[in-house]
Amino acid sequence: MTRSNRPNFGAFFFFAAAFAVGAYFTFAAVQGDYGLFRRVEIAAEADALRADLDGLNAEIARMENLTHRLSDDYLDLDLLDQQARSVLGMLRADEIVIR
Image 1 (cartoon, rainbow, N blue to C red):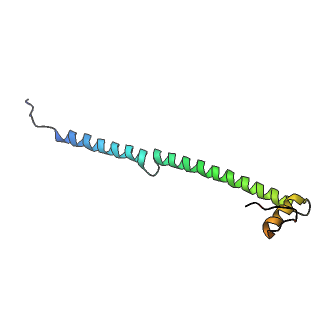
Image 2: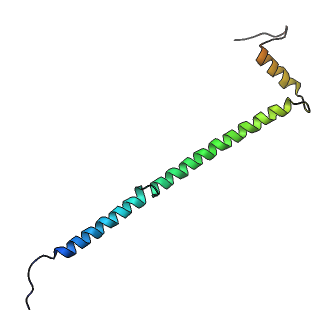
Image 3: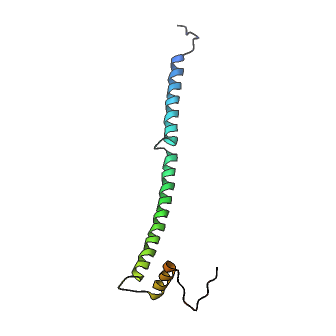
């Protein structure tokens, strides 16, 4: 039996299709909606949101402290004086304003 010298295009198309499918799934695993890059973006966004949450919790704690210091149970006269001066814009007679 003799072999023909015809190129085998069936095997070429099979391997080309397999390569294309592999390349597509590799691209989707890296760049897709659930890929590695998106995962890194989500992790960075989560870190930024945690930092914002920590800042907001600190601000809430500061406001709760100020509110407690002006409550009926505990009255900080220095803070009350500072707030009254700030809101009313008043000064004592012995004070000098520097702008």
